[in-house]
Length: 270
Image (tube, rainbow, N blue to C red):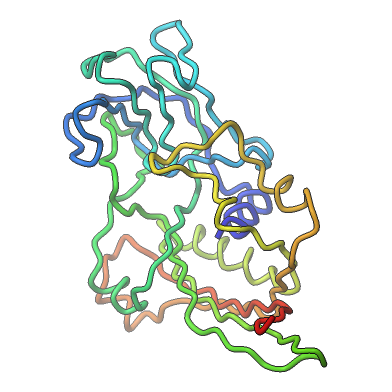
């Protein structure tokens, strides 16, 4: 998912730069009493500094005063498009603002089928094309978005000595705001056939429990810093939801599918 996020952001410039107020959020049961949160009208924010042209914030403004990450307990929640501060800062400051980049598509890992996602799920919208005068609620899935579901994994013998070729079939369900946005995403990933990307460890995942990063995160630097196992996009197929089915879903959503066949060589029995 980190590779795919970096791929579409860089290849298609799939993000928008914003400067906006940060609005006090009255409740968040998951934060507890020791914190206050201020939210932007948009989520998710870009946290990858290897995305050319993206604004990855290191702090926020209180009027003309810049607050660095860590000051007043400042945490930047890139996933939910907000900032978190110590409760002592207060929860009624209306002078906070920030500059950030919003992904054109939010990313989510899911084990739901496409039928459940398309027919049964209800989503909030990032509303990129209208001005919002309030923060967006945390912890909710927001469209435009791409939902990633690794469906099937299978091994087949590849070489003497116990080396196998592992093939993972990944289905991505794309929810877009309009047909142009949908066509753009499908076109980018249709061109991903024969792309190669590095394996990252679970410990390399950059986001903390609060959606912040530690220091900075540069996907390209991390993926190329040392010799790592490689993955190869062997097949990339894209399609759209048929008009017959789309009549039964939210008319403001445009839905498509990305099917990736990703392979890597490994020694699973060693």
